[in-house]
Image (spheres, rainbow, N blue to C red):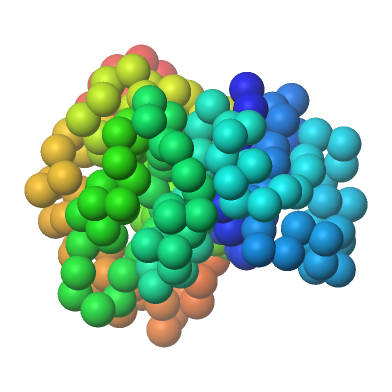
Length: 205
């Protein structure tokens, strides 16, 4: 699959590395695709990764992952150009009380928006395995086909994916995870994760 990742920081770079290792073609969208930092990232990933402008990367990707600071959402989506029928994965976070989900939907006109890859630290994204269990990531979206594509990409990267249904449920999960972060990060730092245990898991094991 052709995947565009807008943003090459910890989250974007980590996801790109995981998917390139699975044989997907990844292009990072950047304001400076020739930067030394980008060259180092591409070298660490290998031949399945490239860099281009945000617009060219978006045109390349069947799936477009938005992994930028929340303050950059409007600018980046304006640069991206035509997003109609593209699967846009919103992995951004806002820290000012606004909904990042609403912001992305506002500017990603015509896109098939899926919310995912924002409910974990990048350290857990880089290594989702904790002993015998893998970390849970939460996903939601209105387009079932688009959501299934992203669900499978998450599973391929090593995660236990849980569909939360609608945006309202995801908002409640985000609040809960913030409370967990406040309570647990002083003890465990950043390298910890949440796992949702379901009764059907026990029955099938």
